[in-house]
Amino acid sequence: MTTPLNVIAMDGPAASGKSTIGFMLAEELGFLFLDTGCMYRAATLAALKKGIDVEDETAVTALSRALELDIQPAAGEEDGRQYTVLLEGQDITWQLRSPDVDKHVSLVSSYIGVRKEMVRRQREFGQRGQVVMVGRDIGTVVMPDAPLKLYITASAEERARRRWLDRQAQGHANNYDAILADVQRRDAFDSNRKHSPLKPAEDAFIINTTDLTPKAVLNEILALTRLHLP
Image 1 (cartoon, rainbow, N blue to C red):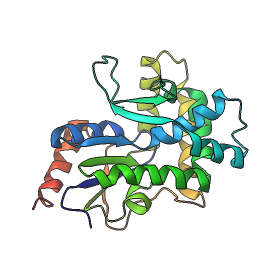
Image 2 (cartoon, rainbow, N blue to C red):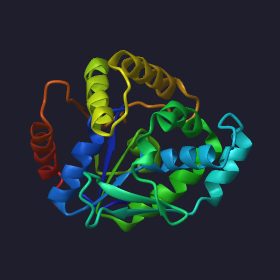
Image 3 (cartoon, one colour):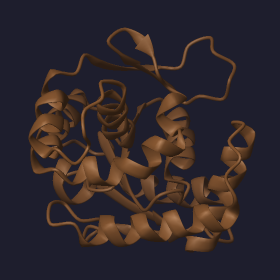
Image 4 (tube, helix red, strand yellow):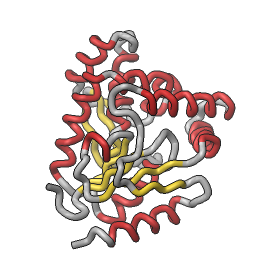
């Protein structure tokens, strides 16, 4: 059994603010921040870089098992990153947010073999304790015994607006309508996939961030954490 506040599981749809809030929460508590979505993005990027057809489930699964992947705390970088992702020793942190990866990551993350491998790696992080783990199936699959489970959501329109602003800051010229369509497509795909569909854990606290600032959400979660202190 996990000890009080040893693991905080945080799930939610794309661009709901869970990564921003999870990072703020981890800093506040002195915990490790692990955005598990970056692991599926890394597998997707690796397949694209190696010219592997992302629709070839067998090949993508084999690749995911062979990945030399490391996730480290951001140290010294001043580009707004929350962590550093190394693929075969190379920093790919910002490449993970490219439109091409966005387009294919839902498919890659739906493969049962890929999910099993990533869940195995994620549980290794969880077993170390003192971690805020963010994803889409943390509370339901990866760490179902986490003492505090959160489901962070927002309207599709607000999430598309946030992603559009992020893309602008990164120099990508996507338009809002295209991003909204992609958010809605990913919602439908992630919620209806056969393996580990996106949904709140039965005992998760659901927080809608549409009209809330990250600081307001953080304060609400910190109030919940106090209920789980020994």
